[in-house]
Image 1: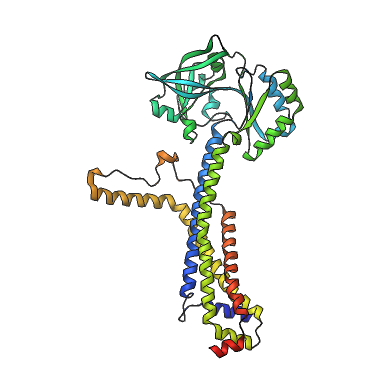
Image 2 (image 1 turned 60 degrees about the horizontal axis):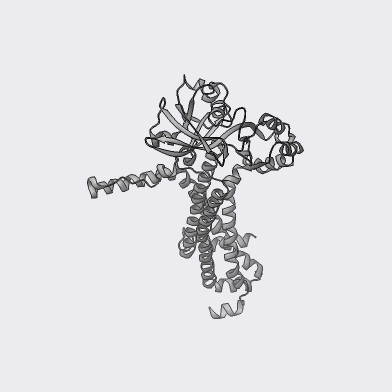
Length: 447
């Protein structure tokens, strides 16, 4: 093996005493390193976006929702149903909380018009729990009135999303008018509408725009009064510890004999999870991530094809040396190993360098983009003067993130570098196989 590594290292060297790779090998090294670094950066950004969006959805609402599919969806004996769910053994270690809620569409008055919103009435405990974000089914508060929020469970107070506050100028202390359907629908009377004024005592922010721009929270007692559902709810909501527990908990609820008996005596219920509600959204994110990954991975394939040309060129230039080595008794298998190792070593170094560059760029990407934005704006202002509109490469009002999310997955980087190394070995194998089959007499005579 010593002679094999010695010859391989010699073939790796470029021209000159301190030459580093030949010109074609350098090109293959560069393309593969760029491909690996791009793949690491792109996937880190996509993983960051997915993680941020999932965390926003995860913190914003219920994870598992149980609803009555008949009539107005009222669940009268909901305390009994909560007790049944709490006694399912498989749920005890996975479920954080089980509560009764009222969630329904409503209208928020904005000047002379009404805008559609979602209203959620939750069972609030003393106000200190709301302030310290100790209520499981409630998002994180961004601003609040410390004195008034303590009475959230007993007075006509509401907490609105941060984007609702910004869009319609509903700050702390202002009154909002909310209209909701109430009671039971009938053909003769239609839908009764309940209208009431509430005082804004706080705003919340989940980081998910569609949630922060639509949802309004009030206490369960006020919600029961507003929707005319005394001592009733229209949802049972569960929060679990992990996204991986959703399907398991859903199946265990459906399989529970007590839950089945309750449905027969009360009504028919549907059980759905957050993943069911956002299935199309998550699928679209995953599809985008897959498509971008495939496109970027083509750079690595291109580098591997370049590696084939590089090793083939090396074999042609070393035919006389190959013939001499075989004439001296070096087996064909060793010739095959020499040129395969040649491409694999290039692939390993390109993967390591590309992976480190990718990690660095992913961590510093926001700063780099901000510097580029500043330079563009500087030159733009210098050329166009006051007519120049400031540009942002990562507009936060579109992506709704305070910082560019990055999630570097070390296991994924290891997988990418391993795949690049294997591709390099495969790319070098075929020219190496041709080299191993060369006839030493013919190659020496031709040279």
